[in-house]
Each structure stands twice: as structure tokens, then as C-alpha cells.
Image 1 (tube, rainbow, N blue to C red):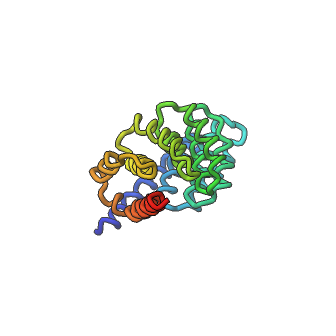
Image 2: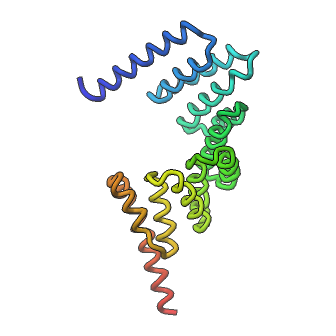
Image 3: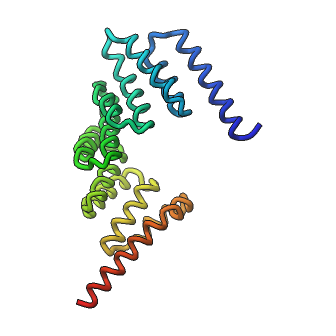
Length: 224
């Protein structure tokens, strides 16, 4: 059995167990969520959507149990690029424990559509709701970087790294903000290279573009 076939077999067994668990207690929203999340993970998106909609229908008279299912359905739509539908589902999450995660996913939905100002609003709220979570701060950094505000991007990447120094994406982005502003960037790119050399290699073209741009700018400055 190949590695891929072995993984597929394991996933099928997990799904069977989850289906059995749901059949045993069809009034537990977490069992819908667990199965739906697994179906989303293995990219059975239509099945996942149908399951979450079925679950929401089961709990129509108990809104307190619907939040988890709206969140799961939002993840299905986000994974398939249906960002507006995803945002709509995440907006229906009222549960306090899930609220910060839902706000972050709304922010990511806007970011994916290049609507950076809206993304910032929700990412900032998510950050305020989950002060020890580095993810909203990283997304704020991405938003500011996308709008060309390198100083604020740097500020939020630093806040994210203060909570998780090992994040490859954030270290790379922080290195970019340093590079663009003529600051030392080696420390961030070294962290990336140590943890994932392929990531740095994959994004080398972006670094080369920035280096070329800076070289041209410096050249213009020297002639004036």
C-alpha cells in the first residue's frame, strides 16, 4: 500500500467511526462538527456542507447549539473560496468561546478578497478578544504590508513574534518589512531557513524583486 493509499484508508476509518458516533447520538452538535471538519479536511466539501446544514436544521429551536455548526460551515465555504458565504456563517457565531476565532476567520475572508480595511477592523477586534493569540496580530501585519504601511506591519509582526517566535510566515514577512526599510533582515530569514529551507527557496523571487527595487531607488538617489 502506497503512503497516499494508506492515508486515505486511515481517513476512511476515522470517518466511519465519526459517522457511527453521530448515529449513536444525533443530538450532540460536537459530533456533527467533528465529522464535518474531517470531511472538510479530506476535501469532501459537498458532504461537509450537507452535514452542517442538516445539523443546523436539527437544532433550529436551540440556537446555543448552532454556533459551532455555523463556524464549521463557514470553514467549508472558506476552504472552497466562497468568502462572502463564509463571512455570513462566521457572523452568526455568538458563542463567547468561538467568537475570537470567528472574528479572525471573517478578517481572513476579507483579506482573501483584498478588502484590507475591513480585514483590519475584524482582525483588531479578534486580537483584542484573544490577546495571547499571535494569529490576529500576524494578519494585521499582512494587511498593513498589503497597503504599503511598513511601519505598522512591522509593529504587528513584532507583536505576533513575541507570542510565537518560530512562525515561518511571520518571520519571512517581518524580514520583508526590514528589507524594504533598509534595516537588517538576516535574523528573520535565518529563522525561516533553519525551520523550512524550502519556504525560503519558494519565496526567493519575492526577495529578489524587492532587492532589485531597492537597488533602483538607491541608484536614482545617487544621481540626484
